[in-house]
Amino acid sequence: MIKVHHNCLLLILCLLLFVKGFSQDEIFSIGAKGTFHHGSILPHRPQVNEIIEGHSQAYELSFYKSTIGEKSWQQLYNYPKMGVSALAINMGNEQEIGMGYGIFPFIEIPLNRRKINWRLKIGYGLGYIEKPFDRETNFKNIAIGSHFNVLIYANMGWSIKLSDALRTSAGVSFIHFSNGSYSRPNLGVNVFSINTGLSYNFGKKEKVLVNEIEERPHKWTKSIMLGVGIKEIPPVEGPKYFVSSYSFNIIKTRAEKSSFGFGADFFYNTSLSDLIANDTTTSPSGMDNFRFGLVGIYSFDFGKISLMIEMGGYVFSKYKGNGDIYNRFTMRFNVNNKLFLNAGLKTHFAVADFIEVGIGYNIK
Image 1 (cartoon, rainbow, N blue to C red):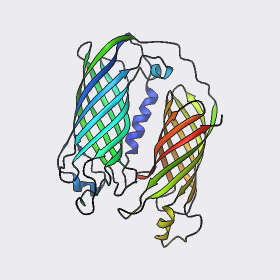
Image 2: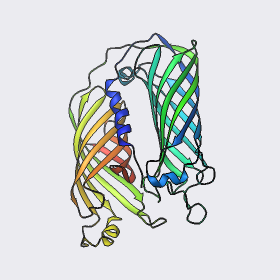
Image 3: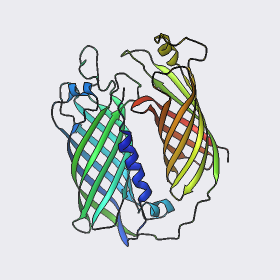
Image 4: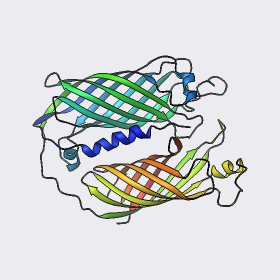
């Protein structure tokens, strides 16, 4: 099972509420940055101690474009940088886990306008673990059971200007690998580190725009969504189970960069009947694989992209093994005013349920 650091994630997202816009004159359009991380795998479960031997070192290369305020959300979030990063991580245990690699798009948001600039960088992408669990050749790695994983990246850093084009930085980072219970075992690999970096800005200089920001209509929007996923349950190397979700949401624009709302979720999880069959306290029935829940939603909005936190409770669920509370952490991309795409992770507090991808439609 996966350990998800909800408190860390919630703290990072809540910081976005307090970002206030400020003005600049001109900025370079593009740039590159190299970052070195030194840290360790976090022993978030006693079993993870089995694979922790030495410190980790990570090498990160980033390419980015500076936003200049062409869209209102860019001004609201202090003209963030957007780009792509690549990671290579020596996990500190060559025998059982080997190297970790990742590639992910990111957004880097300035949180103040002082000479020592406080910045938050968050990213979500694809991770690769060189040596996952194998029953015969690598049975000690009970943290991760697949080569390919979801990678979540967060870095809180401080940047200092050395010249017009050069900046140096220092910070702390959290890097998470997980397959969302697609393949067992899946305790997850969490790497915490301190880091230092050097960035070089180049390309033409562009004038930062400071326009009057048009207020978004504070109205309710109704939407329907279909999501699908695949998961495993114990024992290791068992069968794959299909999961689907059907959601109805009502969301209202709260401010220029956030929204809130409520919803109802219907889940069809084909693994539940087998879990109930192994539970002598529950009698099997034709409704074993069905769950119904009600949910509260908060959304951080970046133009067409929204990062959504959902907390819900089951109104109906025959299986009680993971409690009555569930969470979803979702990234939504609005294709247009009607159609949107969804990708996210459903959990029960610190335990992953499944990774889902979906499509939705705004009814208006």
